[in-house]
Length: 421
Image 1 (cartoon, rainbow, N blue to C red):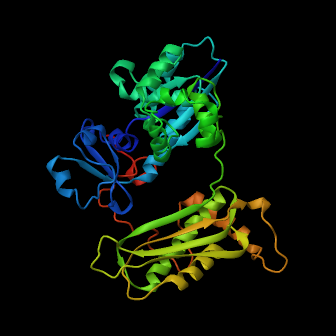
Image 2: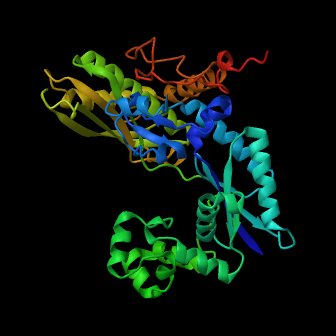
Image 3: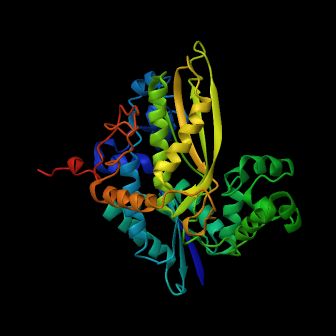
């Protein structure tokens, strides 16, 4: 008997803040994006007040004050560490865990035919909460698609389900699919939702009534797999190992407008270095670097400018020195004097496995780079990130981000650990 589960952390970012500040329980919370730009996460209380996702922080400052919304800057070191702790608890219940996102994981239970899966899921839920403080909802079903549907039921009707719902009969499957709007089905994007709506497909159940040929033709084999999953046949496999990214980007808005080439150059070098670190972490190299800059589109009274350039390298690399060098070559071509820049970024693409890259006869990277990068990464793991930098980087700060509402890094910084008196 195969059973799949989707474990989803409730209001993950807000819950991370509440775990260490219990006085925030039942209070409206908003989490802001990098540089405190816009709202990227809301507690249920904030949603009930009508706070929209993506709301610009500067336009909603009076709204926050009027409704006593507790506002926080994104604290990704805290969120990432709490996510890892939750995932480690889940691995105690089954070895097959697919970390789907920072706050979601699929679990596969094979050989659990004689288990009471609802009771087992409640045990998981209680242990995660006891050991990490994180509230979670769990949906279970015979496929990943139905586990996702069951999770929505568990979360929507939390009082009745106590955070756990199991689709273990044909009656439950049909009832859940008839309840779920097609636009809310996992894997159905806006474009597909519009196309399906034109064909009188309003619910997940309506989707399963379409012919396989129509779904394959209109939504490819991916859509057909989803249909089979919703019908109860496990077709979407577990991805036990995260596949390498096809592109890696580091982009940031500046805390203030920048006009000088030297300042933008320093930012591009830093972003290129971070991309290189991510490449090395997943064991990859890249063939090309894309660089872009732009002014502030929300200040139309200023001269507007945006531009980008793709620079192809003569050989694949994962070296911070090489990637920064070619990123700065691109910047030289697109930088324009007289512009007040608000954002810039670097993206590496043409990614290949480090041990499978094509060698060149005449052009090649200095063989000493590999050993140097390995040593730098070792030192960063031992002493903390960004201790060693390129000479053209800001030696005092890595990111210049506005984070006026940043909470302590309770679990990742020794100076922020809570003291019990």
